[in-house]
Amino acid sequence: MIATLARAQQLPQYTWFTYNYIQYNPAVTGATECMELKLGARRQWTTLEGAPNTGFASIHGKIKKKKFNFHGAGATIENDRFGPFGYTGLNVNYAYHMRMKKGYMLSSGIGVGFKQYRVNFSEMFLREQDIDPVITAAANDFVFPVINFGLWLYKNDRFYGISLRQVNGAQVEGINEGRLQTHWTFAYGRASKLSDDILFKPAFLLNYVAQSRPSIEAQALLSYKERVAFGLAGRTGSGLSALLKVDFLGFLTAAYAYDLTLSKMRFEGGPTHEIILGIRACGGDSENHTRCAAYD
Image 1: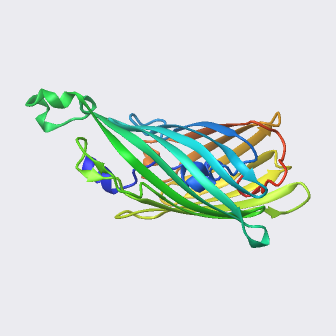
Image 2: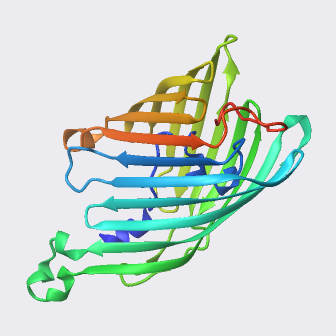
Image 3: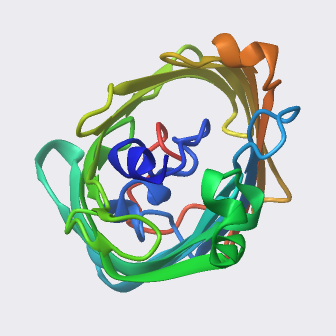
């Protein structure tokens, strides 16, 4: 069972990927107008015992800005648990953003960190459990380094992204005899003006891991005065989602997603909830800041 996990998706997937893209791509680091902190939680298949629970956070901002070109620095953290399995991961990110032609910005980023994997054998049913009492204990494995890399091309109304997470294929010992699989992610988003106050924001995300089926996600949002956004999302092999994001007080953002499972898991798993709170250190656009309306 553990070896099977090593060949499949090893990282959480988020419904609000446009508002949490830094968890996928370190090149986004520093793209906001000022320092930004995000805290989030995702509870999947709420009626299923031992279903995945994920807590996550990120902080990032600009450093050493020189007109349009600038550096970005930040960090991300994830804590994921699925039944007896779990891990905690921390990455420190760096990105460099440079001005291109036709209003585009190009960013390249790298994240370096670690993961601590754990498994609680006492929560598993194994045939050898009555023979060897050692397996009733918990096992841990510390994996370092874990390296992520990404590119991000963006302007005020669209973005394109590609990222590779766990690109170095670090060895995991003790818990399973395998390696961390490289996760490829391709992303695209755009903001189209429907009226003076309303933007239409479609976005797409493709995830691929070797020896597993690609996962395709899509969002369609309507944004009113860049203060309230709502819409629908979907993921292949999973179901549909309702999305809501609200900006208030000039520096706070709350995002919520309700996932309705349409696969066979709907009979046992129930819905999924995801919530993100964003806190910015400023409330207005900064000078020379290239804001991507499709991402913010």
